[in-house]
Length: 276
Image 1 (spheres, rainbow, N blue to C red):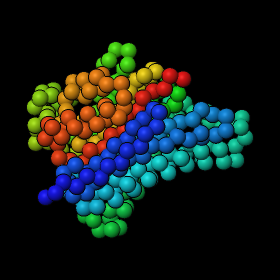
Image 2: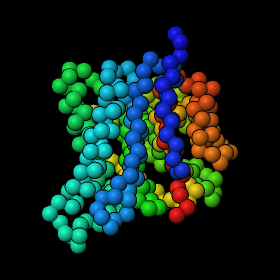
Image 3: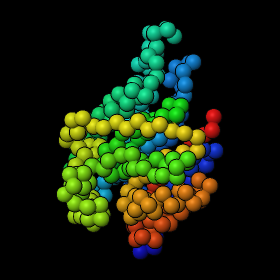
Image 4: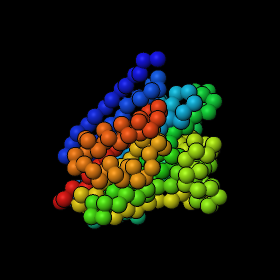
């Protein structure tokens, strides 16, 4: 079969986005990035998200798109409409990292309920999407995820890469319980079996929210498992440390995953924390 590639590249001073089909028939990944000022006089908030329609299920592309659509609508409504409706400027809820955490959790809950109803209404049988979403307020990133689309944080001063999020796969559960090693987790039969995802019957009772302090020059990498599943964290760290240009970093990540045998859709958002 002829390889079909659908690539989207968006360049701004502080971020780059790539999404391509790789060796699949269609791209079931979706991404979104925007900034908004919730209320006049408050600091802007940047919203970034990557979703991956679950492989093997029908309509994965539609589900990942609708996941991000519902997430972003809920995020916008909570931050701008609910916080300002019939409120004077002195009564508006201040935007803090803890408030953003509540907003993201509610947005994920609403997206999950929406996707479940959509799948049922269309009689699609079973369907879902992973998601990793980050909201940045000044120098802190607030993040939530479901499934196996991860968030990484690269510290410019130490040149150290940290995987911020935990994956909701059977293999990762066993890894956290120390029942298998990291090497075993890479090849375990449960590495692609998701415990939680957008559209699942029940969300985790206490889903973690990650708050990551940022410094100028730091990098945030949100990606689908078409990037992360074939690369060790040391591989990703080496690529991010080895080039000063976001475009080159992104291209090298995609190429390294393909060289390692990756055939899944590949999507990433690479964000650089500005100096100001």
